[in-house]
Picture 1 (spheres, one colour):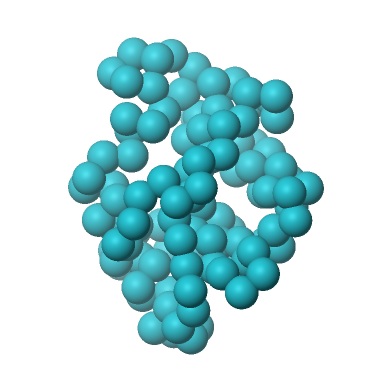
Picture 2 (cartoon, one colour; picture 1 turned 135 degrees about the vertical axis):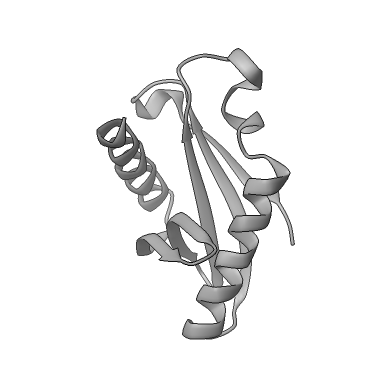
Length: 113
């Protein structure tokens, strides 16, 4: 499962770079949680949650970003910004049904603080 997750994150990073974003860091960890990708789009930091779900059971990939998960992502992003400088930011989601760039759904501003 970890290998599939890593592959999905790499595919998402490649896709976003093709869209003009720059990779800042991958798998940022702190005591609150983890952010899969941190990207830069012009002057905006983009915190990206990558979800690979091969079944739509339980609502699919987007439903897996629960309010609890969003809260952990927000706290982790705040931690990152406190250590690396405040910046305009947003939270995006990359959703995939399979490990294929054709299946990528990019939701900008998937949720907010």
